[in-house]
Length: 561
Image 1 (cartoon, rainbow, N blue to C red):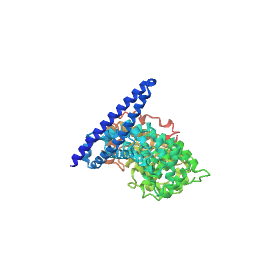
Image 2: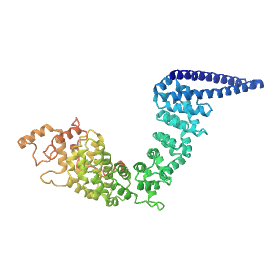
Image 3: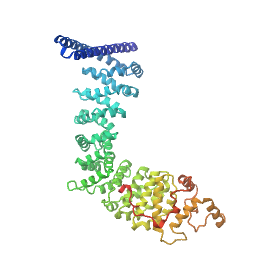
Image 4: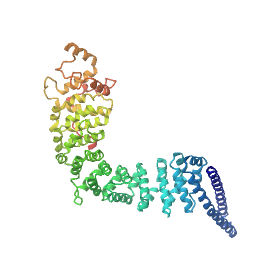
């Protein structure tokens, strides 16, 4: 009985759809004929056309009632997935989108509800998301009936998962419409979710940034959100917008950025802290941000100290800790008084977080970036050098050798550290950095190779005039010997056996193949991971004139440009 009811109702719907299409085409032909007559059109012709038009509208009104009943029945039957599939096979999406230009509200409500249900499946979405349908939906989103407008927005949200659909909607001017609807609370949730989808595209971020009124409303919603943590739809949208330089600039210049910083300090919302982190990642915006927080009207110059204290008490909250460290690491201007942050406990925090196995890799990476900032400042570099951080960084180079991003940042941090004359010799004495860096001088990754080579240059020049200690030669000679051994491995092994009676190279010589702590299977695995196949390297360190290299800019990176 249920199958028969659905089949008969579908037949009625298909028949009425064909009748409506035929009537529509007939009226269009009559209208075109009337336009072709032009001045020759008589009063009788116009009177006849108006009569036909009135009759056509009356037929539509009667048909709308019938279609509403049919679709209501089919919508209830479609609760069963198998029945819904049968309807889709009989081109139900196509039949529905033909009815979006109707004016009867009850019919539009059931059509939109049905389309929203069908749009969950991708194959149906592709049939629905045609340009004409999208244009009709944008118009319906402006309908005076709030239920129709809201259903249209929800249907558009389902369709907007497709990047192609988002592009077509942007062309239709939907961003301005959504900003206007944001003022009305009933639409706010759907609008925020739609805007979040649009914020995944860089072009849409720029468009939203130019709608200053919309950005201001979003920031006001953040500042005045009633719960301790801002709603996920709202804060996720702000996180995406903050990655755009223009949008980040609008956020800082809105006058609502200081309250956002205060809200983070008070409620410790990690996602809201991510917004601040992204804002600080834009060099031009960062300077405006620091000037604003240090201004007389705001008086939040000590905000970084508060962030350090927040990090110290958030070690057990890795999500917040990551965002706080990331925000501090993004502050790469030389005017920051890093010495005060060290006195507030920053070095102790970093030392604790870099204990092997204590932190996840993303937290470790932010710690290394932060150490680079400290190492580039004369007020704080002494705190770093006198702590356990250099030795821990050296251990990390070995432990994280397969993570190329961490390795590159560690090498850069050591460059910053050794670029400071006050601590260079001390760091080299307290660590075994040169042998460790030699292991990366044959890396496959060109960036790792570049940083390792530059770091070896600093070590070689710093040690060029020092005499050998404990029977070992200066680091310059060891570096040359290292490269020589790499190019002549078989010969070195043979000479080693001859000189030491088959026990390896003489302990008095600081060569790469000496027996030392850390050698063995791990050492062989390490060398295999980083060693290239071709020994004839164009960056051959043994051929360099170590005494005449220009090292003036090695303590500066593109992050400080």
